[in-house]
Image 1 (tube, helix red, strand yellow):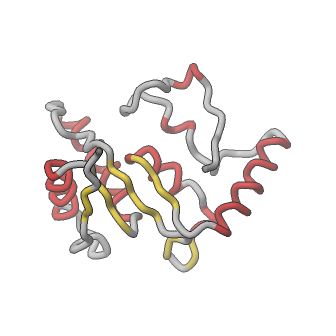
Image 2 (cartoon, rainbow, N blue to C red; image 1 turned 135 degrees about the vertical axis):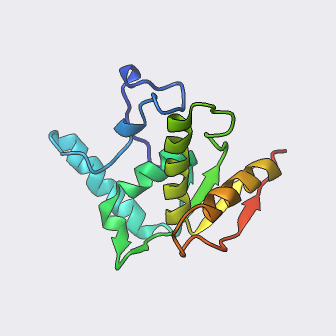
Length: 148
């Protein structure tokens, strides 16, 4: 587990399009020395790990911001996408619904493995996969991890 400090003013304590998800990225310009050291430490930790687990599209967004994880287009180490909620479910406003679908589809494209918490979410994610033009995503199994 590698933690990153986030500002309370950034919209945290909620997980939606208006939360501080843009703060949670590693490809920002480095200004402070301690931040550079944290990035170097993260790079070393990631070079030794076997898998990265990202929770929801916000975690996949953060994973995508790690540019040194990609070699020849293949993610290293693999991304396990833990989908705790399909964000577009229940959203009636078309523009916001499409935005969430796009964020979820990007996470699905990057993932080596996908895990959802319910059969309903599995079906929603499968529909998102069916609606993507990426052949890399089509046919990827979605596993269900039922909460205790």
